[in-house]
Image (tube, rainbow, N blue to C red; front, top):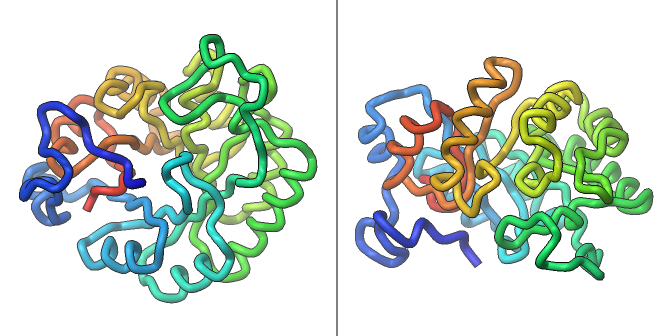
Length: 256
């Protein structure tokens, strides 16, 4: 399932105005310093995104569940076929993370509970192996996030994963959006861990609704980490979101 755009104010999926080219998007922004990361699940999607002007790819599978680690042959083929950087999502898919969680009490943003990002030693071992494979075939970066059973940033797990990824840059993904910590304290932890980027919807169902927090995170982060806005972004709504948040990197399935 492809992540939809906003259901108000912007073109609906399937309409003539829904998909804009990256050049159209840049013209609307009237700037040249914005980076577009396209979230792709197949080689064909990645090739199309590159042809439309994407600056970077995040590769994953099963977006209906928030994305999981792609198969190794897909990682290999996409990295080999593209000339733009390919970051790979590392998130195990063989776990029942939400068993026993009360949906009324657990922090949640749409498809995510915080327990979706709680990993045991076996999970971490597999994630480290997958990271090593990504490095071996030339991936440009790793996308990952880990939380404790209390919903805080799992610093021990993240240190292990960041060390495994070195020297590749690490993006801490939308596990942040269901973290139970104060978002600014969580941001400081993520910076201290050495992550290069934070992908976030501003702890809201989409980046537009979370624009105020995204803006505050950008101000707090300064140049210590890149804030990557994601969820529900299209070329049609990106200009307004750029102005509202001040961020320069955007993540989505419909841009470009």
